[in-house]
Structures are given as structure tokens and as C-alpha cells.
Length: 404
Image (cartoon, rainbow, N blue to C red; front, side, top):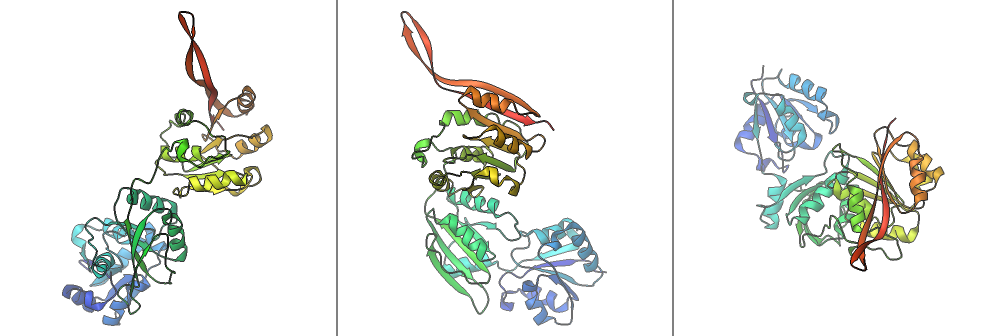
């Protein structure tokens, strides 16, 4: 029975980067587990051992982790070969979490980030690691990138394919970022590139590490003023009325999916996203092309907001049921009935309306518990020795929770 499982970081795939202890462990081991790209060195140094090739997604399943540990414990010397720092990647952590501290030993090689920084002569003291590797939802990853750059911190980022590369640079092109890229580090194809975020180089199939170095910070405006937005020829609500609307979102439960119907300039989408610290997915529908262009421009640094240039009433069936629906303008009773039929129990319907007809139409919808209040911004007029209130921008703020 094996007394210890070795977790060995392959990092840069060169044998000369291995420590003496790592070499000794690899040569004497009788079982290796890892991904294809991690096992090359061990197969070269110890071709007679037994090998288990892991699948990059299924290996994370709890039952597969347990099975792998059981298998590794049947051999005298077992080694888990992982790329990247094994303390940072989830598949090695899953294994360590199920072992006592005296059952494993971690043997770390220089990481690809260390290697790239050394090659580029770039200090790595303040570099933060972000990876979309294994991620099924890169929106959150890209938001982490933007928020980290916004705080003026450098990022080490792993690019896994061309789609990831193109999507990342579609966002980065809107801010000033210097980039040092390492391609196929530690192999005969190794190359180092330096370029700007608004002029990315052609992607080559292979393994990439990017160092993202911000040249500006504080570029994210969480609750932008109307004057900061592109709102030409678009009716847009006032900032203070949007904050009142946000106050209806007072539940602490997580809200994953939000529909903003008739999104206009995207101002309300931006406010709702900021209210949830950008940890949500907002489908912002706007059928008018000119307004849609402003919507895209205003949300180009918000990967969590997907702008859609179609009439939402024709395509709602294509989208997952929302936790929140915000009603913009131009919605009739037929559309409202279809919208609410797609909503699940306990989901919220919110809106700010300026006419009694709109208020009564929304309140007529069945299977909702509605709350609503009238608000106004007021000034005063002198009436002799007294002052009379004068209301400006009167509107109703509505919140409804679906009850079945």
C-alpha cells in the first residue's frame, strides 16, 4: 500500500526544470495520473509505469476523485501530474481535500507565470492569477479581469482557445492594457510577444499565458450619470428614480438571470448589474436599432449584460426563465401576459411608470403580489406667507412577486 501520494506540478514542460527529488520520484513511481499534456515527461523518464489519463471535466466529479484516490493507494508510489501550480488548480485540490496531510506531498516546479515574467524581465510581485480554464461561464471570469485591472493590478491569464482569446480582447480593446504573451512556453515552439490590447496579434493554436498590465484604472463607472452615457434621442429615466427602483430589489437571495425588456440606453441594466456587484446575467432587449447602438456602447465593459437587437416578444422562448424582469416602455397587455407566463414562482417584476393606465395594466396581472408607491421630486412656490409643494417627475414604482 502506498503511504504517500505525490502531487507534482509539471509547469514548464522541460525535464531540465524538474528538481532532483522530482526526478527521483518520477523514475521510481509505478503509477501516474494526469492529463495528456502533463504526462509527457514522466512517460519519457518512466515508460514502464501504469498510466491513467484524466478527462479535464469528468475528473472533477466527486465520485471520480474518490475512485482515483482508491486506485492510487493500491500502488507503492503514485504520482499525480498536474500543469500549473497544483495548489491553485481545482483538480489537485479536490484530491488533497480527501487526504490527510501525511498522505500526500506537493512538489512544485517553477510555474509558467514565473517563467514568462523572467523571460520578459517583468517583476511578478503584484501579479494576480485569473484563469478561464475549465470555466463554463466566462462572463464572471471576464468581470474578474476588468475589476482587477480597474484596481490597477496586473493579471496573469491563461488562454485556452481562440474563442476565449477573441472574447477577452473584444472587452480589452476598450481600455488601455499592455500585454506580454507567452506562446507554448517550455517547448520548441516557444515565442514571446508584446502588444497592445486594442491591437491583438493573430492567435495560434496552442497554450498561451498573458500578462495584462493596465495603463489606466478606475475606468468602471458602477452607477453612471446620464451625462456619462450615450443617450442621444433616447428618453431616459433620472438617476434618482433608478435608485428608488433598485430599492425594490431588497431580497438577499442570489439573482442569476434578469430580463430588461425595452432596455433603451441600458442605464437601468447597468444600475441593476451594479446593485448585484455584476454577479448576474442580464438579457437587455431593445428592438430599435439606434437605441440598440447606444445600449451596446454603454455596456461594452459589462460582459454580464447581453444586448439583443430584437423584439423580445418574438424570442422569449429562447431564453431561460428570469429571476427578475424589468419592464421598460412600450409594453401592452398581450405582451405583459406572455412575459409573466414565462416567469417562475417567487420571481420579481419591477417597473417605474408615469401614467395611471400603465399602473392599472400591470396591477391587473394575476398571480402576483404587488407593492407600489408614488414618488416625486418637488420644489415649492410661495403663496403669500406660505409655501406650496410643486411636484416634478411624478411616477409609480412597482414591485410584484409571482406567487405560483
